[in-house]
Amino acid sequence: MCKKCQRYTVLKDENCPECGTIYSGVESLARSIFKNRLFSEAITILTVVCLGIIFAPTVRMLYYSLIAGVLFTLGYVSLTLIFIKSEYRIQLQKLLKEDIEKIKAGIQLDSIRAKEDVRADNVAASYDKLREICDFIDTDQLKIRSVMALNEIALRKDMELELETLIPSAYDKGFLKYALEVVKINRSLITKKSIAYFVEHRTEIVRDYGIDSLITVAGSALRMKLYILEFSDFIQEFIDYFPKDRILRLCNILHANPEENWGSLAEKTKHLVRLKYNYDPDFKHFV
Image 1 (tube, helix red, strand yellow):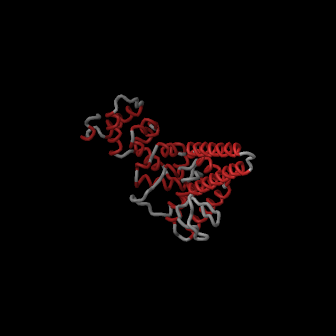
Image 2 (spheres, one colour):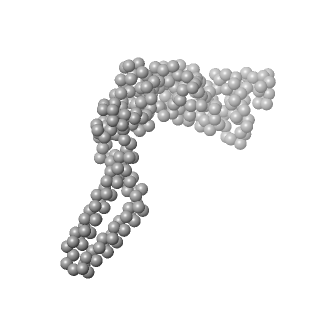
Image 3 (cartoon, helix red, strand yellow):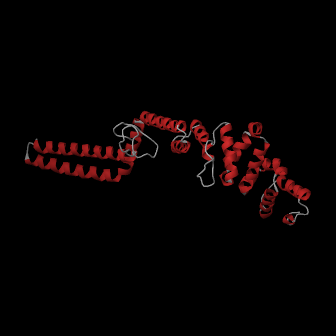
């Protein structure tokens, strides 16, 4: 948060773009407010004790006031030390609740800055900002903006690519374009949630990108035994289109896990191997 502008941000910038002031973390702000509150309460306690001593009608009452003040102060300090962590969390929650509108406005300004980077052809910087915003807010609008930025970048293997965190709740053609590029670069990013998205929106995907896109994802599902069990029907539907290496991998997994209930997938795989790879030495253990 910028103390001067009273502006929040979720970006990792060190200085406020408006005034140049160094940002303060929300935790440090909450800690500062908590310390100020403790100081004010301590001053109040000391003031009450001093007034009790000053206006004590007798020496005995003066001692009583002093002893009571000391005991109360010790009790207050002890309880504060015991519950300091929970009190700090309460103060942090209170700060965030009170400043919720400022936080929303700050995130909106962060989003505007990301848009400005796109207009300035600085797509990589725009994506970095959107990714930082998405760490705090999970909305389809931000996901789609992030995907739009990524689709303008030449994706490479050395990039920190994401997929599952960008999956929207509804079908989006731009996301499919990005996802299919990611599959080509790094199959390991295809997760259960990603495969389920392709299965759910298969009709739209075939319409926009053809059946090859589903074949690619079905082949990627062979990466893990868990995925094969979960999406066996989906895999079985496209097994006839798999290249040799995918069929060989599937056979190895089925053969290594005979205790699993593979259902009709096992029979379909055996039938395919007999038809296409009956004389292939790589498949001699499976014929």
